[in-house]
Image (cartoon, rainbow, N blue to C red; front, side, top):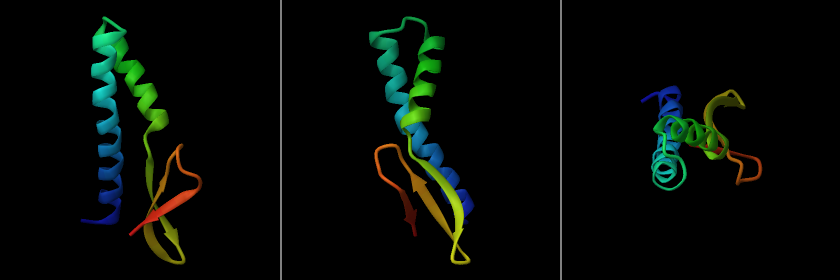
Length: 77
């Protein structure tokens, strides 16, 4: 698997793992309409989910991760 596909997969999985529980929670507790719950869950997860990106460091491609709860950028192997 190429690093580009791996970064995209990490990004998708981190978004999905956060989106689904938040959407279900909003549907059950706060918002009756599923459309508004989806929009609210999207906005919340867009802010709190980690971001994965393919970057070049010292001429070598690596996956970089930044997250609101971590300081700085982490590089994945």
